Amino acid sequence: MEEWETPADSHPDLEYYEAIPYVLVVESVERGGQWLRRAEHPELPGCVAEAPSALEAVDLLDRERKQLLRALWDRGGTIPVPRPPLRVSSARRREVPDVHGQSDSSDDSAARDAGAPASPKPER
Image 1 (cartoon, rainbow, N blue to C red):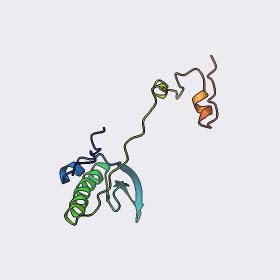
Image 2 (tube, one colour):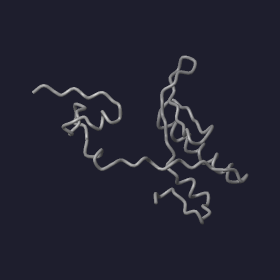
Image 3 (cartoon, rainbow, N blue to C red):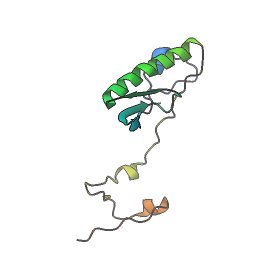
Image 4 (cartoon, rainbow, N blue to C red):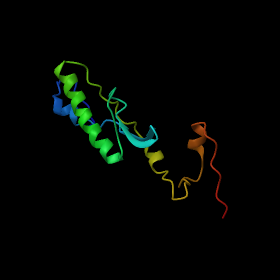
């Protein structure tokens, strides 16, 4: 069981929800001719913050996340919980790209199975 998965028979407290590793998205956006960094937790509707730097945006977002979770908790609302991360097969883990983006694997069967075109082989 992952650290944020809850046993079916337990009732987590607010600290449990505050410890959940929600997905964090940070991007640059232009507002009125000025570039800002926008941070958000897409799994928490409305949990967004913008600031001149990414660090400031993430700090503001953390405060916003805690306020949102507290508000949902206080009114007995449903607090979204992200799905667990996808599992990666051990065969796929061994295919680590080198600095040039080439796989250590000598064939492209995994790419073909997924419908992707075969990668070009480097000339030697």
